[in-house]
Structure formats: structure tokens, C-alpha cells
Length: 116
Image (tube, one colour):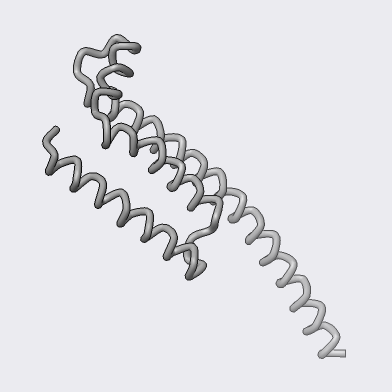
């Protein structure tokens, strides 16, 4: 990787980090997700600064082409994120259904009292 690519990668990392912090500051991103993305950036940063680390990790796993290792980990990470968000969405839907049912019961009670 060239020096120019290292600089572009570092700038992209800093911009992304600032963007995440801005979203948290505006309360558009919950802190637990911000921590997740910031931790990911901290884990990827050494690979951007020292690409030889990826080659070493690839050798540990027996992969001959280092970018394949990175893509494999990226796909695995995104799969875990999608499963986690699907789980959270299911919980929100269950809670929303419960709240809607409670509201319907309250409205029915208010309407019944209004008719009396």
C-alpha cells in the first residue's frame, strides 16, 4: 500500500470517527452503537497503518491472499451486526404491539365511560 493510500485511509478513519461522535452529540445514534463502531475503527486502524499485520493474520489462518482475510472478517462482522439489529427490531415490534394493545384497551374504556 502506498503512502498516499495510508494517508487517505487515515483521513477516512478520522472523518468517520468525527461523524459518529457528531451523531452521538445530536442524539441520532445511541452510545452503545457508537461504541461498537468506534471499537471497530480502533481494531481496523492498525491494519491501515501497518498492512503487514494483515499478512501476518492471514498466515495464521492459512490464507494466501491477505485482503481475503479482511473481507472474511468484515462479512462476519456485518453478519453479527445484522443478526443483532434483527433481534433488537423484533424486541421493539413486540413492545410496540403491547403498547398498541394497551392503548386500544384504554380507548375502549374511555369510550365506554363516555357512553354511560
